[in-house]
Picture 1 (cartoon, rainbow, N blue to C red):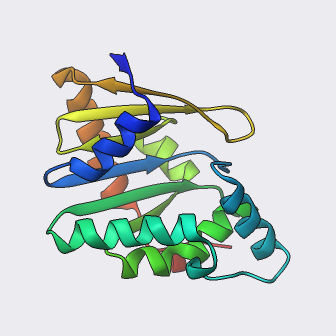
Picture 2 (cartoon, rainbow, N blue to C red):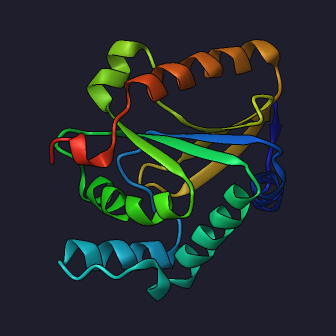
Length: 175
């Protein structure tokens, strides 16, 4: 296991060969000022689309480029029932991510627990590189760690399969 810098992680997102999968388990994230602003507007009843937020639009443009190359990018978001304000906003944003080519699904937290999917965020790139992510209690990114141990990666393959098989679209989650 080795620490992964923000620059190294960004490189991994740009250069994976075939598949990238993300499991999101936090009730809220606080990753950028733009995201915080977008969330606040959504919660105030005045949501703005991604083209109003360059950081978000850049992400979507990057995803569209990667998926146009035949790469698959998918996520399962573990959500509370009822969803937190952040999770409701994430569900609202899903349509733009789908249009960019990402496959995003939702799994209620209680179901994830029952299935044995552990809490904790991670990315799995090309089924060979795992990046474990930690966050502070207020949703700020804390650390990223690269894992290449095949036994650990096999466990994450199992959890990805379970989460993906039982996850559904945003519209089916009780709000």
